[in-house]
Image 1 (cartoon, rainbow, N blue to C red):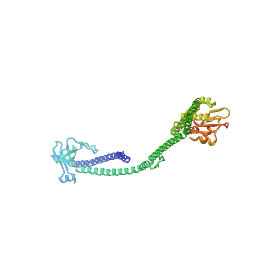
Image 2 (cartoon, rainbow, N blue to C red):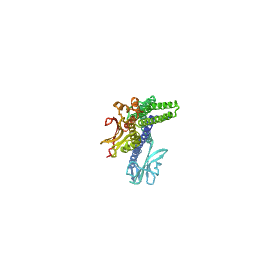
Image 3 (spheres, one colour):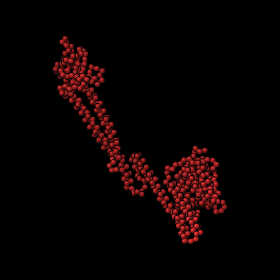
Image 4 (tube, rainbow, N blue to C red):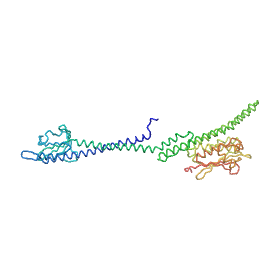
Length: 469
């Protein structure tokens, strides 16, 4: 990992490399354009010299003559840095004046000056060991003849070197300055990332408090927010695990102690009837402990899935009908009148079907356990009542009921003590599970006295599906 390049170096390379290639390509194009027009300027001068010489060619009785003295020719072809050569040739190729061995190559290049005059062409040649640029001017008046003017290429080559030097070297200096500036600025922008890395490396493994969020740029703010969101989820998960462990230790202590006491009592007697009675009690205590473990697991699952749980349209009337039928044998065995209200029409809500089933199951189970009437017939009624925007699912019993303080305490997980002793069994998790399920589904859970004044009414309020009738 230490051999990997840093993010700053990667960013500089990824930005600078294409920029340098583009810059160099633009420089090469600029140099090429500059040289092209400079070449045209030099060639234009050669053409002017050729036309000047051609203008002094005239026809005499003895043939064509060149009316230029050596002094005038020197003035026409004057160049203080380059060597100039010329030749005036008749149609048959004989030399009228000038350098006799100056010849244009057979393969000539037409003028790139944009001239419509097709009598002008250019070529590169070697004369007397010198590299020349030669212009050829072919005229037909007063008789066909050709003027050749050649110029050495020293000035052109020097100009090329100067253009390259004054174009590429400053560009390289500017590119180096840009690389330094990019590295400095990218490093400055990445400084909050280094601070974030240092903050995380120095943090204790158990410290899940939010990290400081830098507002230097939007990406750093989003990264810090994402890390804090992850830390918050981890903190909730660890807290749920700790609370689950505490709940397990707290809630299982009593049934396990009871099972141990029953077993020790049975072992202390030799009567098989005592053994049988104690074994039946052990089975009953184990069943209660098993149910307690299921409730603890359900509560831990609700904590873990607190965010991101799918909420979708659910047919509440079908869920209620299925749950009530499942508890009917148990209600009959306990001589409890288990009934339903409000199932005449289909009712659709926004919720999670698994959590709705779990919440309703816990409410009916609690009612059958703790909502039995001490006088007369016991009944538990599951009712559905709908309004324009919500649907209320209630489970009502005619048992002893709960005071306001008891209702508030029993909606917190693991609350036992006097309330559990008064209810006679391990109370404290069922209502806490329902409360947590309601929170996850964004529903409202309330405990209130029964409408008749005797008993307890547990109500879940769900959002209604607006597409439903």
